[in-house]
Length: 448
Image 1 (cartoon, rainbow, N blue to C red):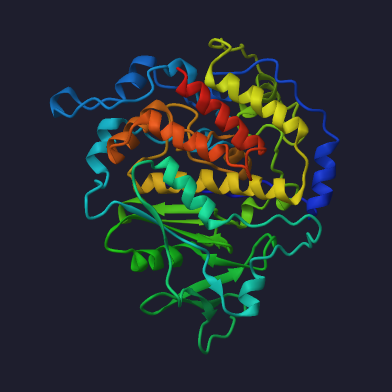
Image 2: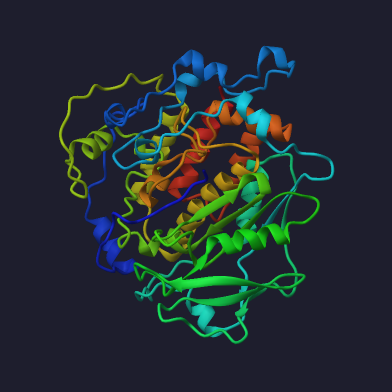
């Protein structure tokens, strides 16, 4: 199952970007004196148990009888923390089965000389004023509005993340949303719009947003079907970016992203990742990755000391930390410095929005490579049950999923890390706490 997000448990008054920023500034910065490398105590209650070290090492390798070469990956598994498994996290609710290298190799689409390009389609042009207005939150956020992520920045990130494969924009002149001829909204407000592709106009369902954060939402399934129709013959995968809010079925409040991995297509929406909606959606920024591994934060989230969640107290033990030069330790130190000096300017909020999109887009494209949800470590390929959990998860691949990716792309680990580090050091994003932290993690990893 691909990554999904729902805010069913979060119902808060509408709040503007400026109001949310003011609230955040009143919080004392967390000192983060200790980091946790094991799952929270809630993991035991949720029946999650991290695979043993021997099982994790075996999961990075092909079967001895397969005659496949052992893939290069990270040997320093002690530096990769376990999933957090906080209350209501994906692994606490829907753990699922682990996918080791052997299982992945039997199901993934192989990269070939004819199908090796990753395509990214920019958000469709809105050729009607009312359809365009659906991409704006209902609550006015007129001050400090950040810029939506630039598709080229996302393409460049994927080029580094899937190092060795070409990543291109899928572009054709007629691509865009238009009214559906003769359509009239139904009594419940649902209606249809058209999506013009290079060959024909496809019908897309739309409905009123249940939580009224956005005026309307578009059908994820219809857009995925359209993506399959649009898939170029030489494409290894296609990711369609949209600015509209999305839904998958009648029970959804919203969904941020989804992939049909076997069909090579993915959809990711920018809508819910807008930082101006963080207060409304109860997104906690202070302990986004890598600060999500703060021991005190995990204890409070479990025990109920966090005021946003009431939980029963329970006994727990601190986890041992690797040496102080571990990649996670380096990332947290860099994040703390950057976060303490970071202000909510339009530019900084724009890079925050971009960081959220790069993480989810790389996750969904990972499903197109046949990589399932990770249960071995804290990892980019974990499932997510909320926006807050999204923010707590890392941008890197764990040793198991890194072995899969390097086998699929025929890539080289150090070259890939160097390309990602170069991206994190770009002038217009280098001050972002997320990219500063990821850059520090990459430097420490390259030095190992």
